[in-house]
Length: 319
Length: 267
Ligand SMILES: Cc1cc2nc3c(=O)[nH]c(=O)nc-3n(C[C@H](O)[C@H](O)[C@H](O)COP(=O)(O)OP(=O)(O)OC[C@H]3O[C@@H](n4cnc5c(N)ncnc54)[C@H](O)[C@@H]3O)c2cc1C
Ligand SMILES: Nc1ncnc2c1ncn2[C@@H]1O[C@H](COP(=O)(O)O)[C@@H](O)[C@H]1O
Image (cartoon, rainbow over all chains, first blue to last red; front, side, top):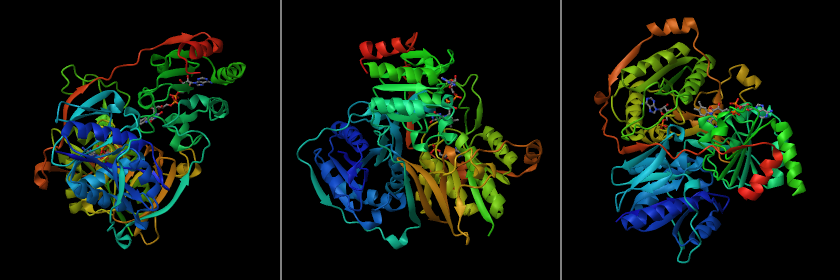
């Protein structure tokens, strides 16, 4: 029997949706190995997030203490290890977000666990779990086996449907023994990118721009507002300082899987494509007819984005 | 206070190369594939060099791999690193084993700061730095970046993004997180993993390349470091993902709208 522990992510009491994808993956493992799934919520003033997660039919342990207020791996990792022992967990699952990627390998060392990151699917047969994960910017998929008594993985949220609400959940406190005075990491500040638009990873439509915008994201932002879309960007646009880092889509940025992805002034380098090829419909607007983005786009328009995007907005208004 | 900086350098497939799985699933097709230093590690080397230029000290670069990894170590020495360590290990490696080997190097070298890439672009694991920090019981600042853009004046002046406190005992690290940028203050010694926006790495100069040939690189057999070398992450098979098919080129905006509206039904 293998119990599975889901490490949740929350901010100011709000549960991150990616956690529900991790829960789905955890349940798949538990179903195959015959264990039970429980979850851990860490933070300070995080009770609302724990209740929200419990409303998805899972037994939640809430580690709530001032020392956990900021998502410091140094403070959170020992709590994850404690919770895993309390739960008798042989699998630890979290979402492959910045928090999850920072925390999970650190917690895994305390448990002697092997880790697979960015898991796309749970494969293998019966109780033998193999995990599928991308390598070489997603050009190749690996099927990996984790050895040892405790195993851990982070899941790519776009690849697992979020768990639905269900009865039977509960919240119990988990005592926190981390001593604030012993920490050698201090939180200084978080500069948030504030936006009225939907989160890039959750948006139904993403409008993304690259070097071809020459730094003018005005037309694309306008289109995004018309469509209720999030705005994304290529590395070139982010590196130039035109838009926040947080907008980068790709191998080393965010992975998105919207219904519609509009790439304007983006050439379609493999590192960019790695982050958006899961979109249902891809539109490319590029003035170079040979740009590689056209090889993966469902609808390609060879045009200057500064003409095409305003024209598309006009057409949308006309209905 | 002079700084001792340890930087890791991995030999990886060139990101420009097209990578495919071998039909039998045991590896990738290597014909025509070029190798180079992991791009994130170039950024880590650059950051270490800037810190040394500002504070004085020594930059030691380390790689784990076969004899060929000497090429990437020399490339780091040509950028300006002082000496190299090549942990000779042929065969499969995972972040658990890699971080244990690096822990042994840290015990020998006693650096103030270990700088690693946030991920190696071959296996895309994004784990080694976090595991190393955990093994050492050191603070970690992953995904190091800076607030100024790569086109900023600070970058033109080659300022390090990692800022040391006056007493040299702590470092301020700006890091990329979901939803913004966070600043952490870590006590040294610490582990930092670097992201793309930390700096623009320099190119090696011709004199740099000449000098690098004479710099010391010590080879250390992995088996001599007292680490269990069997990986716990075992790749059972590799395969190519389904490729997206190219769609159609539309004539104009009107056709694009019609297709999106009537055909794809997304607008
Ligand atoms: C380790 C590593 C990791 C990376 N990670 C990422 C990542 O996560 N995400 C990412 O995006 N990239 C990443 N990259 C960078 C990637 O390789 C490309 O360099 C980058 O995606 C290029 O951005 P771009 O398409 O905006 O720019 P370019 O390749 O310069 O393309 C600009 C395009 O705009 C078109 N254009 C110009 N003007 C117009 C106009 N007026 N109208 C319409 N089209 C126009 C041009 O024809 C061209 O196709 C990574 C690279 C490395 C080495
Ligand atoms: N074999 C290796 N040799 C040197 N450095 C490595 C090796 N493997 C991983 N690293 C370092 O660890 C970082 C993260 O790698 P990974 O966790 O494998 O994605 C890389 O950017 C390197 O700096």
